[in-house]
Picture (cartoon, each protein chain N blue to C red):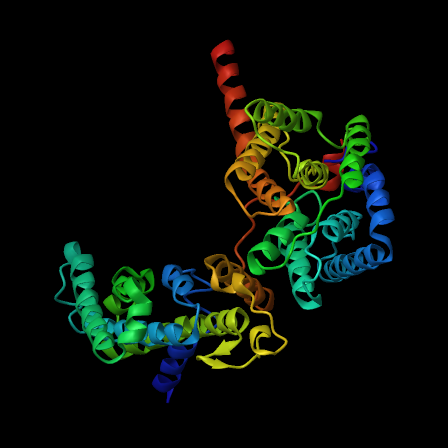
Length: 221
Length: 258
């Protein structure tokens, strides 16, 4: 039971409290690029989670055999091989989405999130906890991606998963598509707002102030 | 900075006083519709200032009224309530209040709102600036410079660039009213503009050069759109220009004093 509880904590901690995107600000490049629609965000999330879990398992399984001096090369090799497999699967079965995701699936190789988890956790833990930790982080990343993707698709086009939810003005409805949502800056705004909201609810995540403003009496002199 | 009478609020109130001729001229031409628009923006900005007073203990500021005036004059007309509300909230909260309120912001909230709406709803028609409103910017500039709110260097820098542009054959006849209004309302904002002497010259000149560039090469752009885009980029560059001016000053000092 105690071990089960520990695994549960390892799995759920990265969802909000230690979320890799909003707390550690990792994996932003893809999080911003693929969230114009929910289906691409979902595909990207699944791909990243699968790569993350498998690579964490493999790295953890051979962690005693990897020489320390070349560990990054070995880890990247493992991640890259998995990414190639995922990319091929997507091209074979989901060609359309794979084309819309373009280079970002291949770029999972260089995603700081994947390397961060293998380097900091999987290298020092047994395979099962490593994979659970990887799954938790993958789900945390997916959660943010899907939330931002849903907001951008809903307000940018009035659709969700390609189905019309809000009737646009062009089709006789009331909703004016907000095209800024489909441009890259809106992802920054939304992510920033999300980080702000989470850190307002959990002030322990906020970083220490870089400098303290002088007291009003001192300024008055 | 608080020096004697001068604190953030004094600057905001005096800026508002300097803008009165512009507001009066615009209101007398826009009529009741304009008054209702102004009231709407005052209400939205006021509510956000109130929210931040309750949540963060930031005192509400007259700067909200300046933002409201600029938005009432420059926001595209038939945009609908929800997009206008969204854009105004975005500008007022993200560009000003989130930074700690008037005086601590990097960009003018009205500029940010207008750019946001311009990118978000590219089809919305920008308002026209009529000639009397353009002329009303002149007393604003005179009062503002006299009471020390607006920088003469920024105005002169922009004016010189326009002079050079016109000597080279640039036609500003269509845009000059929007440029005059944008210059006193957005570019010369004492918070968002440069604050070193050289920086202010460069700030004004950069705004002028950007307007000239857009007028010459950005076809099918409305005058207000040109001015807002140029004001956004000039405000974004202002800290950089200040930094350059300070670096030059430090280098000169080091050379002189060893």
